[in-house]
Length: 214
Ligand code: SAM
Image (cartoon, rainbow, N blue to C red; front, side, top):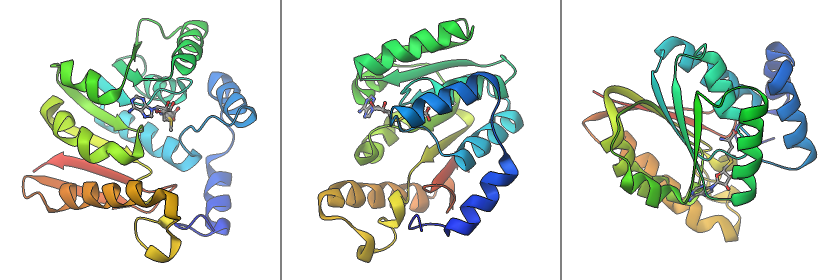
């Protein structure tokens, strides 16, 4: 049990999704072998679906890691989106940049090195889709910036919002994760109770929230 879904359900859904091909397969293999956290398979499929439905022209990603989800989104947009992705870990930035160049996405994906909060403060573009996947204990701090940077009809997709079930149940909380859990609960309350926003929280993967303006 992941704390969110049953193993049999996860296995079944992953079986339906099947294996990735080409660069995504290679990146998944690298991530698995090197313990790099990338979006879970169901979350990846959800992201692909949302990008192909929403057809965003500009995407902002918080948390690049090796560039897997950025490349997945670029492919889902058929190359019609420009993606800005923020990553603070220098090693990850250089791996992501080399993957982006190796698989020919350099004209579509730009990696910005730095802490999300600092980089967000300096941005003033408008984005059609924002994918929040970094600094699980800071989503509530990123939110005001993301709302400021969100295009009128844009959407924010945030991953890991149920954090292995800990966000929903105190029985699952590990002591050293208590701050992340408290802040994630605050984030979910803010996006759920703000009358100007509409949010749906999906107990899929590690929990995904989708938010837009009303
Ligand atoms: N989105 C990626 C994917 O699915 O391929 C995975 C991102 S991984 C879950 C989170 C990444 O965010 C890590 O590489 C970590 O170094 C980075 N990160 C964490 N906190 C950050 C922060 N405050 N600012 C910038 N990057 C951060």
